[in-house]
Image (cartoon, rainbow, N blue to C red; front, top):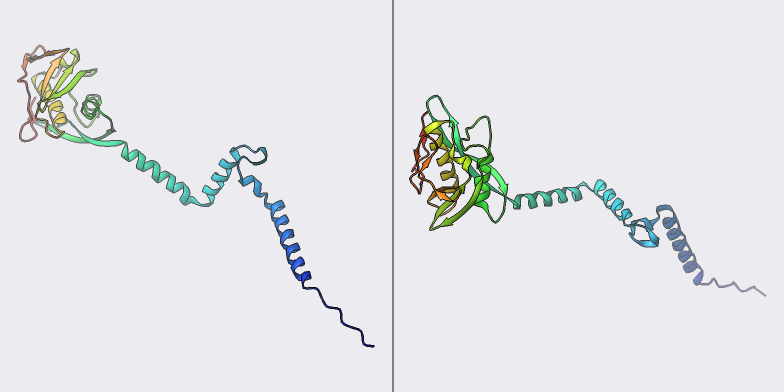
Length: 217
């Protein structure tokens, strides 16, 4: 009698495939230790997550670039550009000129701008506002700036021209803001009529000229 051929089970190939898949997963798990990429698992600290992020950043530089761009945008949104009016010396005159300055955006842009002007020092320009001058108070009424300054503002070693320049530095810097027409000057709470020993007359309110002035010493 002829022997019957034994039928091969259809399950055998499937079992082999499953076995190979399981073996492959076991190999990947043990060689690459996927758990280290999962912060907080098996008692691991979140510092592993930071290391993974750092590794990703070094592998993909555009991630770090995106972060830098975001920081730059945030910085740009937090600053504002203003003009500070200072003196520029020539052979015969001192001309009032604007220079651009970046300051932090705030709820008091006028005060911050005037403070930036008072503090500004540059060997290429003249700032004749006396050192250590402080703003006691500053406010706006009827489109005019009222500024109360400390006693230091009252003394200028450059004489009449110096007083002229320091006054108009503040006037032009203040009136760059929309709708502001001029400045009333006070020292320690009192509106002033004269500055310093020279008796320089202050015609409050002081308004800007139609063009930037030049002063001779």
